[in-house]
Each structure stands twice: as C-alpha cells, then as structure tokens.
Image 1 (spheres, one colour):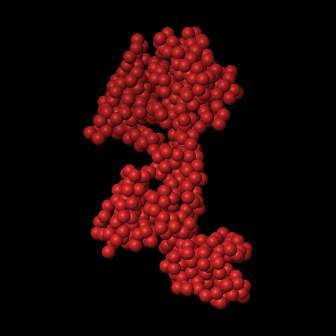
Image 2 (tube, chains in turn green, orange):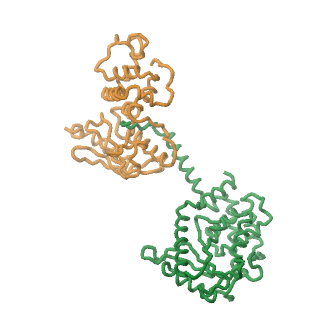
Image 3 (cartoon, rainbow over the protein chains, first blue to last red):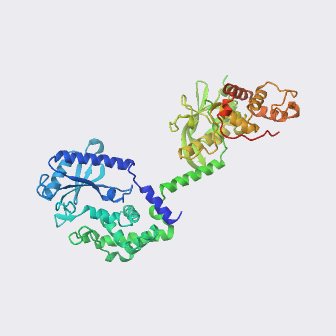
Length: 300
Length: 236
C-alpha cells in the first residue's frame, strides 16, 4: 500500500455517510432543535441551516460537530433587541430540552434528561442577525473577548473551504489535531491548511501533508491567517498565538520524524481496512493449515 | 450400560486429554449423557482467533457415534445457510459418510475437536468476516450426499451411486454380483477392492441412511446439483 493509498484508507475509515448512525442521530437532533426554535419564536422567521464540517464536507468520524446557524432577518427584533438578547433568548428556549453551554458565538447542546445527562450531542447552535436584506453577511454575538459583535458570512466560509481543492488534507489535518490534542480552533486550522497548500493543490495527498507539516515545523512563527469573510474586522491573531505556534511546530516535527523512522502508520495508526485485511489473512492461513471439512445439513 | 461406565478408562482418557488441551472445556455428565461444554478457542500458531461457547453431546455409543454439536452462545444465527438447524440449534459439522477421512472410528475425541470441529468454527468466523466457506460446503440433504459420492466415486450417474450405497449397506457382498459401475463385469473382476475398502471406511448405517435419502429424493438430487461432475469412473 502506497502512502497515498494508506491516507485514502484513513479518510475512508473516517467518513460519515448520510446513512451512518452518527449522521442519523445528528439529523434527528437538528429536526428537534429546529422545531424547538420555531415553536418558541412563532413570530420570527429564522433562517436555519447546517454549517461547519457537515456543510463543508470535512467531517471526520473521530471528532465531529454539527453547527446549526439560526439567523434572524435584519431589523427583526422579535427574537430579541440586541445580538446578546437573541443569544440569550435562544439559549433559554433550547434549555427547555437541552443543557446549553455558551461557547464563543455558539451554544453547545448537551443532554439534560436522566438517561443522557451531560452527554455531548456534538451540536452547536449559532445565533445571529443578517446585516441587511441580502441575507449574506451576518452579525454574531461574542460571549467572550473585547468585541461583542463579529461580522461574518457563512457562505464565504463554506465556499472558501469547499473550493479550496485541499479538502482531504483538511480532514487529515483535523484528525492530526485531535490525535495530538492540539488546542487550535478547527476554523483556524482549516485556514492554515488552505493557505499553506495554496500552490500545492496538484501534489499528491502525502506530499501535501508533508509540506504542511514542514511549513509548520520551520515557519510557524510567521504564520498568519485571515477570516475570508471579514479580513480586517475579525482578528484571528489571538487564535494563533506564539504558544500555539510553538505547539504546532513541535507536533509537526514529531510527526515528520515518525514518518521518517516508522512510516505513515505511526501517524494515523492502522486503518479498519488494514485491520480487517490482516484478520482475514490470518484466518486464511489458519484455514490453509486446517482439516478441510465441508459442513452438511441433513435437511434440505 | 452407558459407554462411560462400560469403558471408564476411555472416559477418563478422553476427559484428561480434552481438559488438558482445552482448559476452558469441561466434561459434564447429565442424565447418563456426557457433555463437553465451555469456551472453545479457534487457534492458529498459538494465537486465539476467536471464541465460541459450545456444547458437545457425546453419542450414547461413543466413540462409534458422532457427537451432537451446539453453539450455545447465540453468536451464530440458527439458519440453514450457516449449517445450524433452526429447531434445536444443532451444528452440522460434517457429512457422516465422510467421517472416515476426518475422524475415523477409534480416533480420540481430541482429534475431532482439533480437526473437523475446529474447522467448522474457523469457517463460521470467516463467513462472519464476509469470506466464503473456506473448505466449501455440501448442499443440504440429498443433494449434498449426491455431491459427496459424486466426488468420491467420480461419477454423476445416480444409478451407479445408489448401487454402490446398496453394496456398502449390505451385510455381505459377493464377487459374482454385477459391478456397480455398470460395465457388465462381475464385481470380483472390476471394483471389488474399492468396495471392500469403502465398506471399511463408511459404516453400513451411514450408507443405508444416505441410500434412503437419495431414493426418496430421486433424480431431483441430481437436477438440483449445479456443478459439473467428473466425466468417468476410475478404478481403485
């Protein structure tokens, strides 16, 4: 198996199809969340859509979240006067069925029933208000940080990732982040991958990943990323501070050394496909050494 | 008298051998029947590949009779395609007529467990992994008997096969009888040695049962069999 075949197998094993149990559960929650919001805000025409990795096509089985955006129209105050009011009112509505944890601009949903108390459903609801009638740019409330309002654009984000040409590298980088416990925001990591591989799209996946890690190892100190939806207004430098850059550099160095000394499997481990193939192989060898016995059922 | 009382030495020998080789299997006597129960490890090169909860009910005429095998953990679906009878969960490990090749009468029970029994559960694991039956499988009922004798005798002529079985089931065979291969010769001038050899390998009881099954099924046993048989008989 070549390095690229191996990496494809890793991605295959991390894929979450629409018919998977996990996505089925997320879709069920999404329907519940949407109903909860609409039932509680009958006078508000919320725009409710998938965002995040589900919409970008970068979802990995090992670590996935479902982002559901819930935006009100510009000038619509029925769900709250200010962004903070909308955020808090939505939080209150969602709390009727979930334990809601504030998380930046989002509300993270967890179980609150005795049978699922505290269970993380991997769902973030992101309240906001469109800036104007075009329903493109949006203002989000920021529960932490200096500025309480952040201008952004979901479609610009989605297009930036979906059209990047490096979706597979993004998925592997996300898996690498999880496996190495790196505290980088997924959005920032995606932007970093896209930036560092901007002129490497035609390279093989393994070459892209090696380049990505080499850049992090050697040049992370000068790495900067910009929010494509708001390059000047959304300062992401705090999301990529010196301490994090140093962690990324060390992890990248470790990863490149692992590839050098032990091969790619040392980075992402054996894939399910490889494990299954190895098991079938040993079973076949066992069968070759066994007494050939054909079973027979007396009744037709 | 039960076999275990009639031949206590054999019982002790089988018990000691099995429990030494398979420490998770236990001999249990219930209602005069001997059972071997426990966790059976499918092994290869010292590695446990899989485990099954099993029960072997040794025949009342052990070691002449075949044990009744059951997988009691509920792991294998009770389905004919897995060679498990749906009514009582009996596993159909082998065709009794083939026993001479796999576990000849007089062989220790250990040979059964390390041979056909082990192969049966190894095959179940492979099927569970989406693999085909590693050693193939006989069709169910008469069709499987026909397939087996077709392979053994290298003929697809049902009349030849049933005559062979007739001779295997007979108390005695005479040299002046017509040869079952139907070439017009007397048995003593044709396949007599082969018949004598098979009579030592296949019990009269098994031959009789297979003959009855084939007669009841008639030509449907052949019609239902898809694989092409070898063209001609070979003399032993």
